[in-house]
Length: 253
Image 1 (cartoon, rainbow, N blue to C red):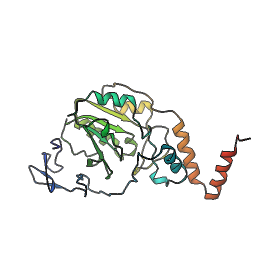
Image 2 (image 1 turned 45 degrees about the vertical axis):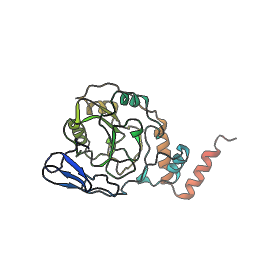
Image 3 (image 1 turned 90 degrees about the horizontal axis):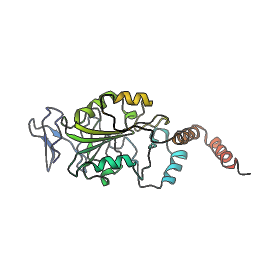
Image 4 (image 1 turned 60 degrees about the horizontal axis):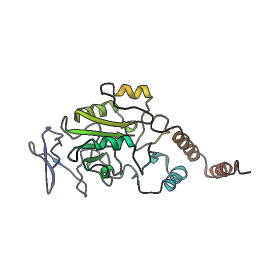
């Protein structure tokens, strides 16, 4: 099981037994959560990031984000939590069931329903997580992954070039990287937020890849929604109440 894992100490493969994960060469052991998820990160904090529950009503979760969510835990995905874009579904259909597809920065989203080969990785434990690890230090052998999903994550990575180097290292020759990066999106720390990229900057990051498709995922509405939410959160409670009242009364006759 998971013969594509590598030991962070010596680089050899891991074996899983009843007590967890142990290197077959140097006998280095990897700790696990109570659920048995291996932890390949030194400074693991189980509840560092608020769980992104994809089962909530879209309307209810949007209202909660605008009026009640603390600024440091706000997270707005570029696509609905209830569906995935057609291009991703089409890509996944190209891979047989035994393929290894790595979803980096998965949060609690269960994309495994779309392909049985998807493995979820994040820096914190969430439901559906398979590995707790840092994108800048992936615990996988060279050229061992068929496809990487890296959706709305790079802006949260302190060392983006290191993360991209790791993805390139673990992808098989001819493998596919599916990635999305926001541009006009307000600050959203999950657990932090470092950068944005223009279309030219985005292309520059992946200049060594063969480009299969490229485009804009969503329009400016998301930016306006997020900016409006941040304005409301920055106001005192009384001012927010009045401002909301004006906003809802405007145009009402």
